[in-house]
Image (tube, rainbow, N blue to C red; front, side, top):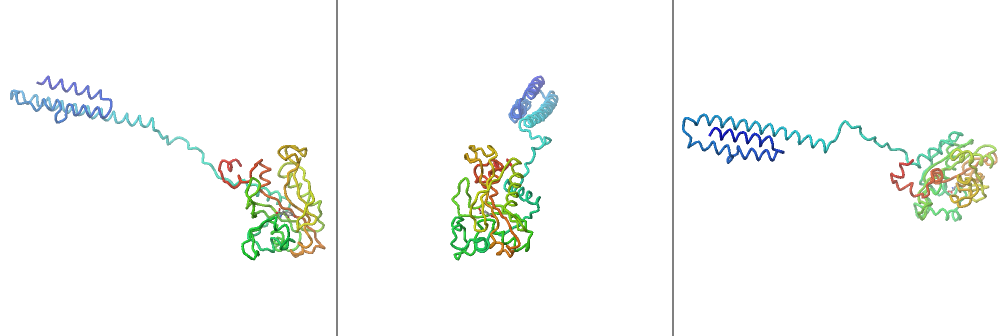
Length: 342
Ligand code: DAH
């Protein structure tokens, strides 16, 4: 009988040692120590054993139970440790690993170009002036020699804010010309005014209903078209490099006389004509001219003493030329894959 107990113990110990996972180990425990387990069974059948031998068998049985229990507990600890180790191996989050760098935000490309333009003009003594986007008919049109019924009002197809058409989303930054003269008072006046403007446009790759312009205005004694051209040349060369020329073509604006459109020589072909400038050699950039005497008068300035020049162009247009962007809409879609390039 004692031998039987010893046999079972040895068998249980080696089964425990061989159990490959926690479930198999539990099976071993049930098989030997459970209520119907093999050792339990043997020990509950002591009835047929002579009374003198029972205590010794009982002791051996209890020792066997303890040893098996201890072996199972130890094996269980080992199995659980190695399960966790394996888990750590396969699902590791290494908290000592350096974190990927955080992406920093930055100013939108149009804000960058706007600031770049401000700095270019600040360097030659211009200050930055701001005007309202909601404007009266007077500042946006009337004071600029664009009376009601004037053809260029139709061209500009405005967003009026009232049925009487007295209030309008400004159609250009030229509203800051009169406002600037009024605020500063007497010349010298050298200002640039960047900002949003609004027009009824059908949206496409080169037209938006809301976009940005940069207006410039200089009023001083003895200013000429030569000063205007020199300023535009300085602008274009500051932006695009010293080999870029400017050309002025006669045009008409109500608020300048004479008026011009100005072009920048194409950076690819330098005037020869290529695909990127539509064989023109030149890229349309903006409008400009000598401030009309009546506009000076409307701003409280004596046109007999002072002359002035002014210009206006689209900031997106400059950004397109600077970065070779072909569709204006990209600037406003806020696709981060686009925005992050600048
Ligand atoms: N306001 C014009 C536009 O919206 C641009 C412009 C032309 C501005 C001539 C000027 C100027 O200051 O003198 O396209």
